[in-house]
Image (cartoon, rainbow, N blue to C red; front, side, top):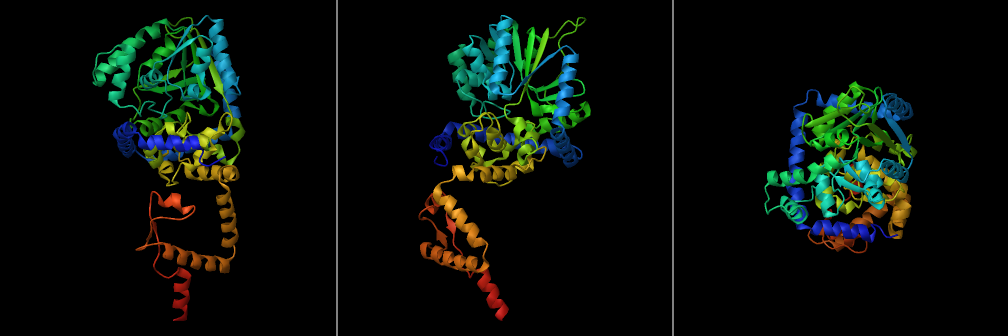
Length: 466
């Protein structure tokens, strides 16, 4: 296959050429980064808290089987049901069977990246069951017929003007670009959905092993409506989202909201333990927790296991110059950005390894990650693992030749002198502005500086002689 694939190249070109996208990203991302920096600056011992958060995630992954079993046991002890889904298909089939068995015709959904990952909406619609997104961002992109472009803010690629046009078309809203008016229109459209839905589906930010508690972090009240009003609550949880204790959860909550939205804590942080008890007036009659593997477990104990530390804050997307330039849809994945480039080929059918090349390896993602995932190192590992399959023949041969020359000092010195002479011959005024062969693509968007000084080896040799 060509690398990058023609489809990937086309998505990149579309992202770069989309003036509305560039405007939307330019409005939103600097605000997120500034808020995140201010929030961590106000957190006492912020770096120590990040170290502790990383240690919690590392410990959990090292003992994932034990904590998952404990979590499942506690959920069931409190009246919930647990389904272990090895694949996306198994997860979708379980939810569809459950909905059919209970006579559900409409499902109200809170934001769930795992739901997007497994394609739950499509599975429900294929079974004749209406699925309605109630998170405002997800609601917007569902109306637009699109997928999320950001882990935290699904509609970050939409300007308020774009949302206004959508609401005018689908909700009959009068023309306006006032945020309050558009929010009110969405709320009016969704209110009856909450009342009519017989099943609510949510994601899970963390599952606390010691009590079987589900933790949901949102800034909208829809999360609580979806998980408490319908008689059936289905929680979709990636197996890596388990946390050993309440104390560990508190540490992770400190860094999650600050990294995601720059808040000390989100507006709604919900802790749900089991379905409604006989003496309780509110809550679902049934709780079903679907633990989704979908490829995650095969990476445990490997160098890529560290990617499973991710708490889905989205901070690495906001820091990434590539994401800022092309947006989320260019990745062609549910999980975009730096962490998405690692996670995407780890899940499901393993497609998407070429995304590892959509990075400058500048390290901004690792610097901002609340659990200090070595994202650039993991991207390089993917490149190493897939180089033979993705790189064109000339580059594979070039790397092979480079490795041979670099292993022989005399040959390396000789090759370096000739390369310098060649660049000087091709360059003008100290710059190579139009390369030849493989260099042509590189110099199409940047100039290559050409050293006019003697090579270091020659300078060192002449200095030694003096």
